[in-house]
Length: 291
Ligand code: GUN
Image (cartoon, rainbow, N blue to C red; front, side, top):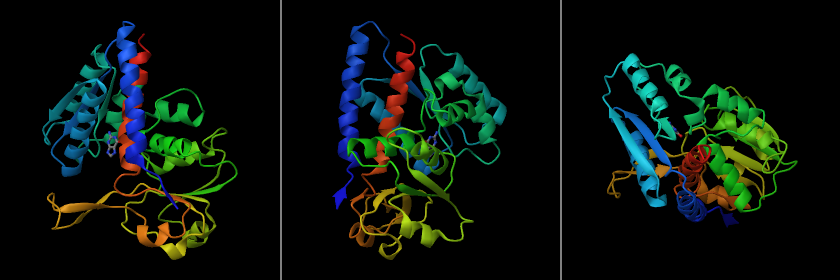
């Protein structure tokens, strides 16, 4: 069994990005600039956004954090989005999700200029991804593809079972795994809460991408020998022994499943750091497109 070390792999990519930034700036290009919009103070969102800003510093990007009140109106938020769309120094930006209930997320995503949508959530960019055209890929699915690629894991002709159909992870991951080039060319089954024969499908899977957000949902008895397991789950569960008061749990019961897997991602230290570095890759691409 080989651990798919997202921490190490993402650090390699981070180093490559830092080198590219230096070269880009030396050639007269601009310093890549990512902006992040944070509405309210949801604990996980604050952590994620702060991490994104720190990542920017590490690779030599400029970053801007736009902090907005939980009570901001949809109209005001759309105005902020418009400002970032028009700000020529900002190469790309993200609006951290989830947004407060009174704001229509889809409306906000649609308002982002697709050329600056480094999350790859705009329908135009998701459509381009599905059609295999150059675009910003959503960060988590891109991180998964990079991890498979860097470990040279065979995906062609394999049965890949994706658990969870979120617009951010499951749905785009299923599209990428089915594209007609590496990493892809898999036979993909996209499963969700209405799937009736999940156990049967998992048992047949060569590759499992678990993104349903239920800690320890997939256990050793549910998978076959040699399976490749990508665990996207990061649920916070109470742990009084930790300074933060919680620990992160994946969707896969690591102890049992790792005994049968050929490759498996840990939580934390698997997909999470790969997701973070993917946003940097997209921001670099956005800055490059201006050269
Ligand atoms: N919330 C959870 N993951 C993400 C992400 O990748 N991008 C944004 N904008 N919000 C998120």
